[in-house]
Amino acid sequence: MRDRRLVHRLRRGDVEALQQIYHRYKEDLLTVAMSLLGEVPGAEDCVHDVFVHFAEAPADLRVNRNLRGYLMRCVANRAKNVLKSRHRPLESPIEEPQSSECPVRGSMASEASRRVFEALAQLPAEQREVITLHLQGQMRFREIAEHLELSINTVQSRYRYGIEKLRTLL
Amino acid sequence: MKSARQVKRIVERARLRADQATDARILRDAGAALAETADNRPQASQPGPAFWRTIMESKATRYSAAATILIAAALVLSDPLGLFGGRHGVLLAETVRQMDQVRTITNKEKRIFYEMGKDEPWVKTDVVKYVSFDRGVVEEQYDEAGNLMGRAYILRDPPQIIIVFPQEKKYVKLPLADGWARVMDNFTPKAIVEHFKSGRCRDLGHATVDGYDVEGFETNNSEIFPIPESYRFLFPIKNIKWQFWISKDTPFPVAADLEVTTGRGLFTVFKELRITCHDYDMVYDPNIPSTVFDPNIPADYTPLSLESTLKENAAWLGVGALPMVGIVAYRRRHPRRG
Image (tube, rainbow over all chains, first blue to last red; front, side, top):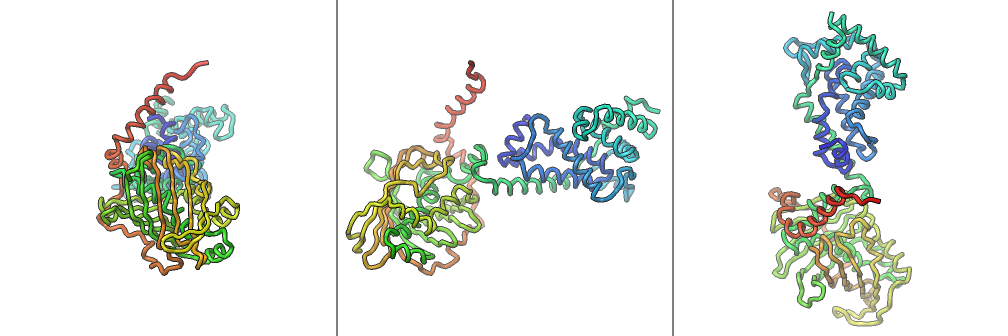
């Protein structure tokens, strides 16, 4: 079922539509949140808060075309707010797992994915944000530029610098 | 060192997968938020499908036409009748003053349903009503054999409608939407007094009703029961004729008669109906045990579900629904040009 139809149903209080939207995008959203926040519980909470807010005001949703992009922007904003409220620099490295048997708590990532998250955590926040939204959030540079209120050239240059650094880290 | 393309691919493939506990937590909390939003959403902004679902799960849907009417009556008729019976003798100043003090009323009612144009009753029921202006209205409806068909609770706090069907061991519970809540508000003493102060009543003169020497009043409009526009297809009232009879010995109404004519609607099982009601045995300010207004749903009762409802009502719902769906589908595929 198309996103538009699901949103239409959601506005009418259809729980099933909410579940379908969640299952359709949960992995992408969790991945983006994880990349931005660098920790699993924070990523889960971020997606949790976005979906609860999403369900609280479905009638106010301004989703005309791209539900995925809308949710991505919500997650990105939420992650940013979380980091601000923690007074935690974006550049801080990913948290070390507490046990080697349980590399991540709750949600799961493969070893390869974990290496990616660790590498992303070492990037400057601006580069990490652009790379995450572009590669994992599948947002176009133009969309990212609009979202971050930057010029498209700035976004693209951050992306290039970030990729260059990742080449040395991965 | 990996190429930029390889790095890009690696980053794209990175995934964090939610475990079941995370899924459950997020869906539970988001679902609760959605339900709360739906409950609190003004009725006017509730669009069709959800509204239909509510109807299907709750009201229109009984296994028999009589039970469907019971719900309709509970929602549409019992409240105005119950309060009407107690409240409309308000043209007389003394009645108005006295009625303003009343907090509870009990009364009985004979309710008869006729298909339009037929003399033989379609359904006959006996009703017992408990009205509390603080708690709400409870109505018990019995069939001709004296079996309890259903008990309807229309409660103010929390605002909700609960209808229990003991014979089927089913129940319906739904929030009292804003539209209905507003209708209920019209039956506060103040609102009714104001309505009748507007002078729409006709004096019927003196009469003897149920052994009382009374003065009668009649009104022939249904404005006092302004069903919200969006609900009218459920129970399309064409006209309501009210007669109420005020005792000459006390300032209270002792009886009320009501005749309602309807168009075809969901709650009328798509029949045009004439419904007559006679309210009697009115008792003012009785001590009604508070437990009367506490919905008593036995543990083995199950909610009336959409599934069962559709199954049971597929035949008569389908008659009206399928052609309409067909027309809509056709129009979508073949929009008018020019």
